[in-house]
Image (cartoon, rainbow over all chains, first blue to last red; front, side, top):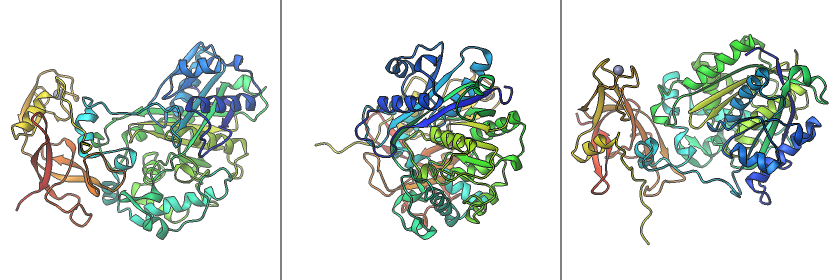
Length: 379
Length: 137
Ligand SMILES: [Zn+2]
């Protein structure tokens, strides 16, 4: 794909984030979509392309009253929206549609109108993982951590520092769920969830949503907001079974998606002003820093513990507070994208001064899938 | 009221031999006749070279502890926390999720790379699960 040919011209989250007991999951999609439409100063009838995950495109399109000529229902977990951005950019460039709306919403906490997730007993996961006591992401996502720590000499304190640093960012963000400062000791003394991870190393569970609107870069200059260009993209999948990953020392999906996006954008690591790495659990930023090639894996824990990713550090990471402190409705990728767009527009609550390039890296399932988007505010 | 039950696998045509094996006290893997690749979970072709000529064989049942979590909460139905959910690397190469028996479920007792051997845990007349215990000697 050619760089900077497509831009984000509308971006918004749901009016409320956190606990939203008065809205169904489907209405959260609509709330986010209407906010993004208003942000772009468009009408619903201007939308001719649509993408969403978990909920079907037909469900959300009909509810909103949209008649699309291009749809994408790619649903590979929390990074689905990174893949939607990539697919939408290709579709706009190919002339399949002009203006794409991407929505995410999840009633993750209040569970109103949320589709049930279950693992069939005759699926491979149902036969070869479920009988051994896995029960939701906290029991599965951290399974690779101990191997990763042993291979690279990562310490428990370094993994705790991920949560501490992200809380520093969250403190600057009025919409973050958790804003009170925490220490490494607080993290290591919080309730055990699934050893080696404790409560403060696991994502929040909240309600909310977000939506993006994309169009061609040529049309984007006529919109009210500063265009945020899609500079590079990448995607991949590995396996829905965490036990069957090629290795626990890295993520194959990360190692495909990340470098693909960097190559397409034509950037080097030193060009990155702002970074989002989907942090459902505290080990993900370490995998991301290593798999995206920012540094050797051995240095990732020390890099974060030394404060390099904190406010004022040389590589601002997860500047909204992340899934650990900002919000996490279940599929966090949309909120990471929203923060990258805010940073590129220059309107983030914890704005990184003069940021021109933002890398937004997502994970789906338990390392099952990955999508990476490189944004820029300069064409 | 009945106790909530542990999730029970339901075999498919492609996995039947594996579950027949555990019932008979054997851990069965598959090997490609064309390229010798050994793989898991079961399927009637080689995921390395796509050959449909594959053979089922009895694995040694030996391996080592590759990684694990000790789950505290929420606990799966039929499990009493804390319990370890382990990934075992078999001597033949493939890895599989399992549980560790005959060992305290603690970080001190569960050392990465410790040698393990398969054991079989009967759930009912249809399903026997492969689990692992610390290898003797
Ligand atoms: Zn083969």
